[in-house]
Image 1 (cartoon, helix red, strand yellow):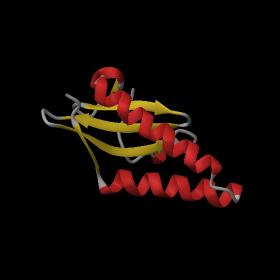
Image 2 (cartoon, rainbow, N blue to C red):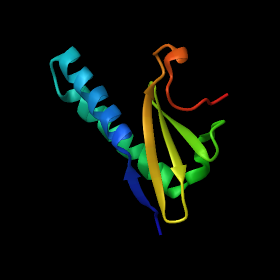
Image 3 (cartoon, rainbow, N blue to C red):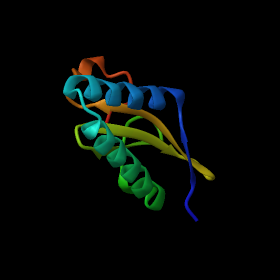
Image 4 (cartoon, one colour):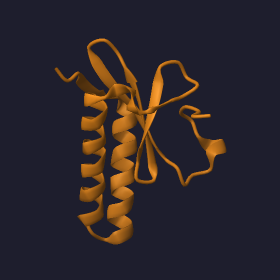
Length: 101
């Protein structure tokens, strides 16, 4: 049975900001819809195989690559928690999430 997926407020905010950015930049919903589909697909993959993501230096937090983004998540006995989505094109020194090194 697949674990329940819970998005933190931070992860939801990240996703909204990313999709909004692409909608404004492209003046179209096409890419944001495609990208959101990729985020959803990544969640399904994580649900079926929680250890697929690269382990970070922050405890049991893992990261899954989705296009130019890292989706950070943590597995618990009953659920998977999506913690944040980070744009890999940003300055890594500004990364406020988790180190993957």
